[in-house]
Amino acid sequence: MKLLLILPKNERSYWGGVSKSGKAGFVRLNLPTIAALTPTDWDVEILDARVKPVDYDAKADLVGITGFTAEMPGAYEIADNFRKKGVKVVMGGVHASALPDEALQHADAVVIGEAELVWHKLLLDFKRGELKQKYKADKLCDMENMVIPRRNLLNREMYSGFYTLQATRGCPFNCDYCAVTAFFGQEFRTRPVDEVIEEIKGFGSKKFFFMDDNIVGRPKYAKELFQKLIPLKVIWGSQASITMAKDPELLNLYARSGGRYAFIGFESLSQKSLENLHKGWNSAKDYKEAIKKIQGAGINIIGSFVFGLDEDDSSVFKTTFDFIMETNMDAAQFHILTPLPGTVTYSLLEKEGRIIDRDWARYHTGEVVFQPKGMTVKELQNGYYWIFRNTYTIKNILKRSLRSPNGIIYRIAANLSYRKKALKMPDVTL
Image (cartoon, rainbow, N blue to C red; front, side, top):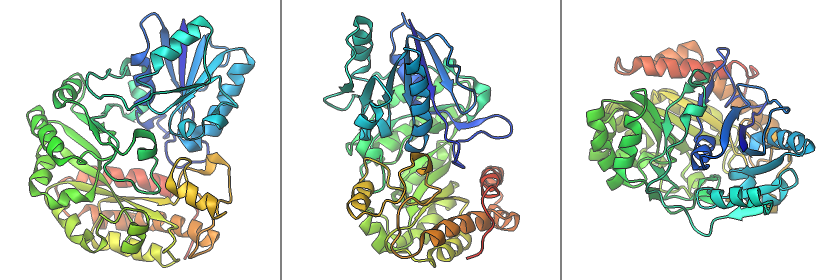
């Protein structure tokens, strides 16, 4: 039997698109993992709609689709077109898990949460003609002896970051705006270190990216993992919390093991805003010192900031920009607060009647879809454009990139990549 797995695309977003060279960004692990979970009597194909158009005449007995919230309009269109041809469709992922009844308007079945414990049951039910509408595991999956994603089903040339993997799932923190704990749970789970190392040894590259939401979420585990990475002489990056700056041993091992960069969620320079988000363990007053320690260890920082929080007014953009330039932050990502379904932020803004747009295609953190408190919708949107474009002028890229000769190639490459996105945005003034 033929299983066609599809990743849809979002036409509006600056993120997750395709470059002029025809490449998407990092490989997402969801569909290659589903493929690996599928019994060998199935013929499995993965189609990434970001890099290849969907052929609705393609032979398929079952179609599986997943996507982020911003990709769901495209996902629903794909699902509807296949169902019109009589093909059964199953959906999964963060959005479908948060709003399964919505997804079922376009699909025959929905996987809610992690698929590992229910995928075989779904396929058996399908073969018997007994497909149910909802499949949800009664517990979180064990991360021991996990399947290795079937990367052989992907075209390596289509991605700028082909080798990705997971060592942990979940996050020990529970920030209001984040969909991670809503999907993976607040319990922080880890794979056996030796299994992670064996997967890495199977890569055809010394460069890879951990897709973990917080690779240092359990310091003892992270230290063991980093120790065993050192002999491999690899280069990697991941998301990490700024709390690692408080642990010199952890910081040293991160760098020695090949960790050249870290995506760190600063989110806000306001401690009150951080506490309102239940991210009060981030200490805004200690940010500058933490940045010095992390950069001093040889790790490049890609900082993440969120705008539109209730404590924010229109001055937040200039304040944040000055902070980035003063600290010579290596690169930065900016996001407009977005009430993703399944999050606390969504529930709060929904209750307050402040969600003003239900077009999921706009929920990519680059457009305003809610009514902010401290500024107008236009001020929030224009401030987002302004800080992106100003952070990535050639002059400002050079100032930050030249802070040290070590790692300068990585910094310039990352900044030029972000600059391409920034130049697609309107040139506005505050």
